Image 1 (spheres, rainbow, N blue to C red):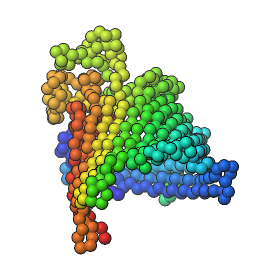
Image 2 (image 1 turned 45 degrees about the horizontal axis):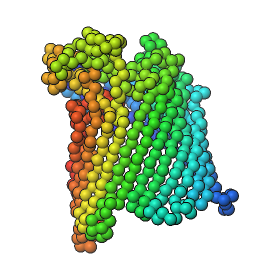
Image 3 (image 1 turned 180 degrees about the vertical axis):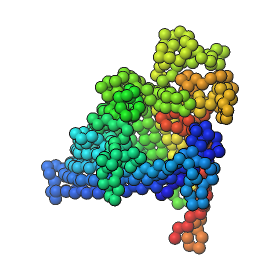
Image 4 (image 1 turned 90 degrees about the vertical axis):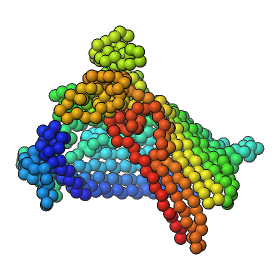
Length: 530
């Protein structure tokens, strides 16, 4: 796919950045190769009181991507040529970048089943990834689980209301290698011919990403889970209850590094360990079953509670007891979040704003010593809330009566916080002094700030919300021996929230610097069943 980006030399963006017109063209391509093989074996006779099942396999995945591009700046025209070639400017710079990664896995599993009452499974994976440096490419990830289907026991025969009841417990370890490819190649201006290697028909210069930790290891997460599956009244009501605890070691994160210690200001490395714990509830119900033409209604409800905590930072990896993360728009180099032991991941790192008569006082903060400070410095910064919701709740419903049907899905987040970067970046009267001023955030009407206050906790807001994700209404009717259905659907029907920004789920990791609202999509149509 070819992509062309052209900015004329007479628009504000180009004159402000000093590029005076720019042109960029790229033709990316990617090839993914996957091989999956496995073998199942079931002995013809039982082994002891139960039956045994064995599975073994091998998988291979390779991703190869090539990004050919050309760019030019300081163009002497605001028009693109008829042939799609940029007007004269600084000589175009061609770049050809190749990234490649491989993942190889060996896996095996053994299952043992006694009368579908007692179940046990053990498994192991050995994964190798090219994204890690030599010596750290392989990881072993075992797992084990047991289950007891209580409803199959003889003593449950006298309780016909319980149609299914299963108690289960499991432990397992999983690995994570989700970060940038370790192996990259590129052609670029000034490449030493002696460093070039042949790649297909081209001679290219190999390089690693600008900053690489060659000792990075697999991130591994060990998880304990205890759960109960249930069915009541012949499955009319069913669901599950789960409690879990996850412990992650060698947590992979992209973090700042000390100036001069690497080829970049950031590096992806193992920063320490963290813990997640919580529980999940799930309930599905056939509330009404009116049969053909009658009123039927099925509904589902789920709720999840989760908490997380950073347990430890590896000082040998990052050389610090806390790590500042979370770039924001506006302040150069400003970080709004922190990784700190004892605190949730990506907690906001801000100063407590002082208020007078319910209005924030410009430039005044409450220090950690509970005194008034005239600046937001190290003596005032603190970890304050986190972007992750403490509760996630969902509800779905589907109803039908004669030819009509109605379904919808509701979703809610509770206990999450959002940093309103749109307001902190554009919420002061200093914006009016620019040669080409931008729109102001309406928050300036409440604060009256004359200058930016990026690190004020005033901009950390509750992000809890209730959202109607979609509603569908349909009408089904026969026509000349066929079934026709007319339907109308609304996605993102409405959101109820106290958040002052456009969308509490905008941005990344709770940092909202997106002024574009989520689309509301209305769809209608007619389907014919042949």
